[in-house]
Image 1: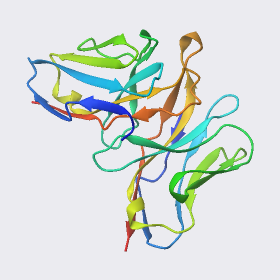
Image 2 (image 1 turned 120 degrees about the horizontal axis):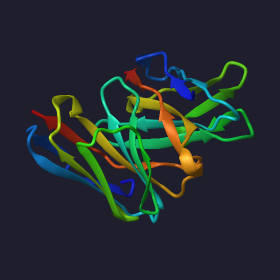
Image 3 (image 1 turned 30 degrees about the vertical axis):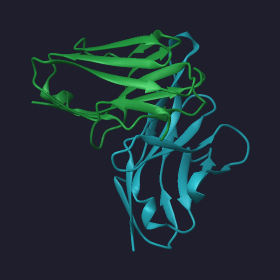
Image 4 (image 1 turned 135 degrees about the vertical axis):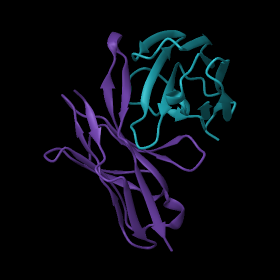
Length: 116
Length: 114
């Protein structure tokens, strides 16, 4: 079965320090991987995705993610955290539906808290 | 603003009430989704519509009834809900069904069932 795990409920980091939000996945075949962010009282916003190609994917707001096939991981990173990055981050993998349709399977989310 | 609008933003209802959630997308997308978001749990996909045809009903109780009258509008009709149905209900849309496109989410409806 396809699944996503985000092992940390919360990540705390000081402003200006690098941040990492972890994600591991389990799929059959080639994975299509995504990161979304949710700010308070808002819906989810797309950050970046990995379909194929370079293992390092760059996305919005200075975020990037590294695809590691051997470790089945897709960790989200940023070299220098901002207080405004504080939000809930979701990792997702493409799953299958009947009739040739597909869906996103989300992890439980990781709350990122960036302290001044 | 993501182009997906949900109303109302907040809803409080008793277990015997009937209410509806509305979602509208202004992006020209062909697929629309309902998700349930509960604290510290993965988003739960409830329903998927593509070109107004329901393609997924993810074992959702019959007290939730979706309706997709056209490709821009999606409703979730609620009746005889239970307190455990209290959650944030998110609507999303995407260009197509491939699953590699971006999903655009509304801000959600915060539902409280008393």
